[in-house]
Image (tube, rainbow, N blue to C red; front, top):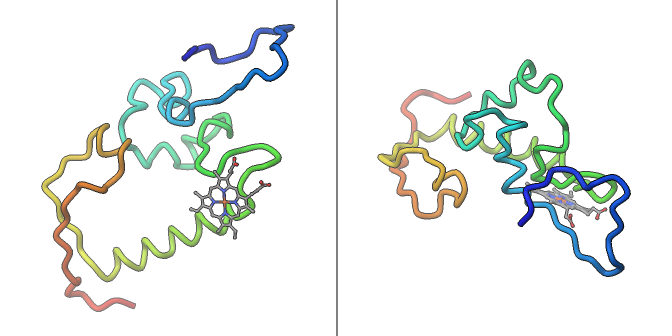
Length: 121
Ligand code: HEM
């Protein structure tokens, strides 16, 4: 796969050429996310760290005219659900967060889940 970031000016693609972007690689592009692009770092999304960042380098909901219509709803629903779950339960794991876990998801990670003792609101 070509690592070229931009299509050359004036380049003519033959009719029927299929083009694709790799969201996986865009999400790990060191030029956009810094040298530690492979690390899970929620601080990447702090307001001050988002200043000047190209809005098209984070694409869970795609981008452009056909981007997800439910993007804001989806994101807010996930944050709300996660906040409630963390408020009520405690999660423990001996698995260290690494590139493998971040890229393949939590499918094979074992958690110990217990109800929090503190009263929730
Ligand atoms: C975490 C939740 C969600 C994720 C990760 C997600 C992701 C996406 C992605 C990547 C696309 C573009 C697909 C493509 O390029 O062909 C898309 C399209 C779409 N999504 Fe979502 N979505 C989510 C939730 C929702 C919700 C809750 C709704 C509606 C309430 C919704 C409605 C749509 C619609 C209508 C499109 C098609 C837009 C179009 O083609 O013009 N999505 N979604």
